[in-house]
Structure formats: C-alpha cells, structure tokens
Length: 156
Image (cartoon, rainbow, N blue to C red; front, top):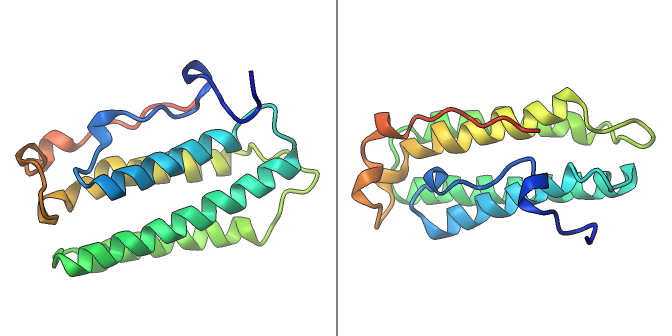
C-alpha cells in the first residue's frame, strides 16, 4: 500500500453524505480538508512530512474559510458576523500551532486531534448546516436545522 493512499478502514475521518451542506464547491472543499487531515495522521509519515501536511491543511482551511465567508456575505446570511467570529477563533488556534513547528516532537497531540476533529468536524456538522438554506439551490431537506444537528464521530 502506498504511503499516500490510506484505505477507508485506516482513515481517521470518513466523509459522510449527511455532512453535506448542499453546495457542491463547499462540500468538495470539506472533503479535501478531511483528506488532508487523514494524511496528517498517516502513521507512516515522518514528523517532517507531518509538518508539511499540517502547513497544507492550514493553507487549504484558511482559503476555505475565506471562500465560505464571501459566499455567506453574497447570500445575505444573517448570522455572518457570528460565523466569522467562530472562524477567527479557529484561525487563532491555527496560528498558535503554526508558530510552534513540531520538529522532533511527536505531532499527534490531543491538541491537534481536538483542532481537527472537535472544532473542524463540529463546525461543519453543527454550524455550517445553519447557513445552507440561504444558499442558492439548497435542497429542501436542509431547511430543517433541528434534523441536521448530529453527533461528531470519533477519530481512531
């Protein structure tokens, strides 16, 4: 098996269709970020590879957050300021990690797992679901937000 391709049973996060926000580009960005997170946790990666992957995850996440915020502004999402505040809190956490490269330390800390799993997945599943009815072409089943509230899966 290649170091860059993990089998579904080895993935830390497996995309679930019910996490979809009903917007193709946002869903594809979410899937890309999840794939990068899974690469980061690849047990065959050296700390150097993990540092490179971590930097890529951060770059893609920040680009995604900018894209999402612009889309929400364009579509007059009423809670945009709160959503931006959550993104800023996340970026602050990212910046803390970015200032402290791992080098020889083991990078699979609980803090990294919480950053990627708890914040990121909870945000997609429970926060991003709140804006879907404001996006053009949103399927009708996305408008009932109480149905969309889901538990975040565990990471192995």
